[in-house]
Image (tube, rainbow, N blue to C red):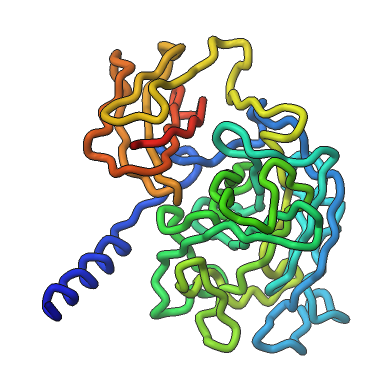
Length: 334
């Protein structure tokens, strides 16, 4: 029995090592959303910032080029309001931003809002946790996953692999945002996912030192570039765009006038059929409730997708048109 337990632990560990989340922006299967798509119906209109240290492991450190403060000082809170434009505000180590909106964000089909950072490429990534609230007081954090190794510290200008990151803002490069789906928090009694008034962005410190480390929802230390001892320290918040709110809960990435795309049956057992597909849809992907890819393939002329090898649970099917995300639809496999 003990031997079987060892085998089970080994298998679980191996599965974690091979777990794959969506890749960088522009790659097939990526969930990165460009600020230029027309799915956004609103952007944050208010932001308050609580700055973190330039270097939390040396709280007296001041950037030589910007003396007089030991906290991040780049940008202003207003830079996080309005459309993503690469004008960002730096949060510093464990700094926070709280954003509000003209209308409450609501859980709708697919992703509900998108967080933009200003990384200059697909690999130098500064990360943050994302939390939501229905009253501005009680916040619930999205379950994040970081499978980046924790044996050695990612250095100040080190790199990360997007396929090892889930539900962490900053996963994608500048002007491509990381999307979040409120249905993942539907079992939380502290919020109403149909009435989200505030979003809080919390910088991931990135240090693997026990005294300063921060952890994902599975207890892993989140390793990202550290230290970043500059006035631009920590997560750089560019914008938060809204896809679904109390006024409009539709989602259509390219052209809202196209035939509505639906799936049936839902709940499904052995297969789902997609109705209303454009002939330009060329790729499909199915992810589980945690964002992990469970099925992906080039799209053929058939609109029926086999689910026999997929376990019971909540899933999301992503449809791509010319390798750009066209539609995201949730379904239940029974």
